[in-house]
Image 1 (cartoon, chains in turn purple, blue):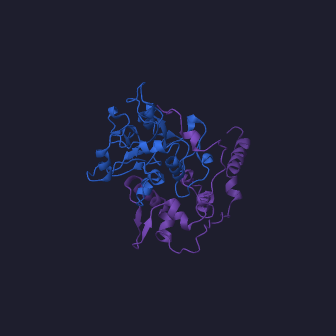
Image 2 (image 1 turned 90 degrees about the horizontal axis):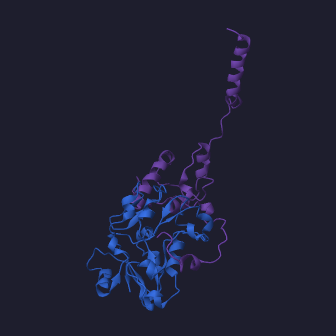
Image 3 (image 1 turned 90 degrees about the vertical axis):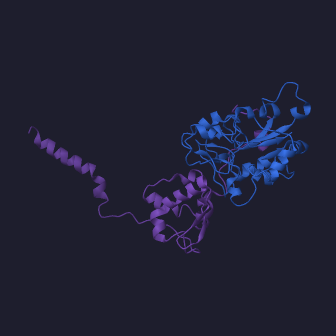
Length: 148
Length: 208
């Protein structure tokens, strides 16, 4: 091989450079996420293990049942009746999205889009509002329909 | 639904129903008319009933404001065109939106002859002053409209607009039940519906 003295150290240097993140983090584990659980409530919809593993599937089923089938009550494995609502039921006990949902979601880099529409407890007081001149009078009266 | 426009006329410029609905459902108040969102709003006779209006219309009708909203049609064109079935007709006749499925294609807006649907051209949240924490908002890129307060009906409450009207101008009931109060009202009064000739079968009736 021509220039083996340059090519082989070059390959070794390249491999070392590419694997730098592995060497710098070797033996160190990122701290396990510790979501804050509500103090005054002991029982969730289902068992802790079930919720940890299946909450996304459960929420998806709730969403389907409520919106498309107009079924709003969930009967859990103990026979307890639960109102199927993320915003009004789950967040009644879990009073902080930042300290509960986000802790694990950030850890695994999951970005569920629930909060694009559903209002997390932290934001229930509202958002920075843009200045609007007057109330509904202006928006709703004396104007032709815009979509006709 | 039956709207007694004679009662509305007496109490102009009342808009309790609009305020109640838009507060209950976190409908933003966007000043830009091209971006505005509306579930229930006011319209002049010639815009609400273009096929019935003519240039010699009497003043009594000409000056009156009509409350308009989604007609929850018997044969909803929006449902026919929706490619993801995000909008669908429930068994009880309500034309419902599944915001999770809406991809924002706006076919439904083109199909709806009543202009009942609004598209979120921007994030609505900065335009909501006092959000109702019990109801979600929408996000940029979805279409929304009146849902006949399905969340309130499920709790046994009347729709927000009906409850908010102090003068009893709006009435809801089961059209399929011949003995219902709403059928009695319809039998006893002359009513109009919007653009009936299109064959959509609108379910909102106006007592003139």
